[in-house]
Image 1 (spheres, rainbow, N blue to C red):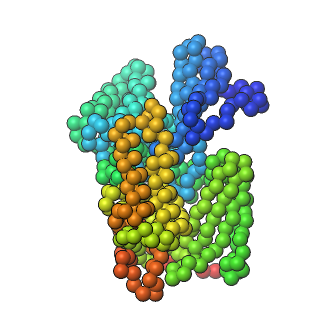
Image 2: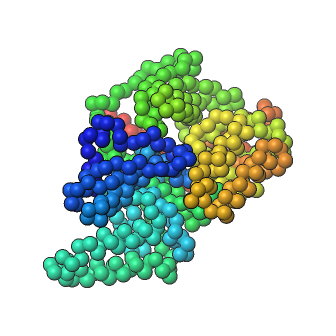
Image 3: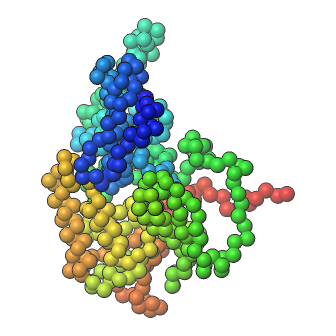
Length: 443
């Protein structure tokens, strides 16, 4: 832990104008107080990106006087709308090299050892799975000398458990690592990206009221206002504007919202935010209706470049699959979008190829660069109509849509399948614990 002087804060010297897209990748250095020896040390801060994830701030402190140092990470974005849980089957030693972002509010579990690190007991870290295990071992060994003197039996049991943790690094047997983060800002690397990782399962969940309170985001009861009597017809012809904060720089901004009717489908809400401070722009689409009783799987056989002009509504609960490329995009990767098929494919290419900082500099590897370059070339062939593929929109909430250019007749190149959701899919949508009958108390 370090202390940054008030003079640095008042002088505006904490951050230079850093950006995750900065070509220099130079850290910002700040003179700060060492809480170990109370001499001045140096804190280095760097804003960077994790591939297929988001921006984070890496902070490292070192003291030249007592040689004390520590490193921690903080999310550079906001608390997400849903929590996230990563479940990884560790089968080989290569899995130990996966990069892991663990925030301070995340829970780390290894079910095979009945081991759990509770939230808010460790600072956030950017490490590997092997690093997480080493950090857990170091934490347990820290107070062992005092335990051996005061409670020898307890110390002996902890020594045995430490040996079990150390043996996990040999990966003689498969074990499971679970990272559950209520803020939604933790991350476990998928080394096969953009392909699906069969060993890694990512699920999102709705936070409980208690979890919201732990994160400090649940409003008091007296601050909750009930809005009733909204005129739906008036909303259809009106653009609503309400204040919000920019998701990038957290400066005050305005969000525009409009209710739009999509032909042969349903009403959707389009939301757009423009930040005057940093220039960041976002647009997002939310379903204007309820979750459908059945999930929807839309499969389009792309046979011609004219298919690129089809309108596409991808809700935030929709996954995108291209079987010919062995590609699957998770439901939360791009958020909700109302665009064309061409726009959707370009957004996918930008996310995976153009905006990926780990294909340049010291973080790049030849295999990764070649794999992503080849993926980008295949996307270009699809956009040009030179490659026939199937594009699948799989939405468990049933709120996604692709334009049928033959409407109201059937489209010979497109199939729409309705299916019953599994228990896990209902859990991700927060439907299993939703009570819709007799929920009002009688007066």
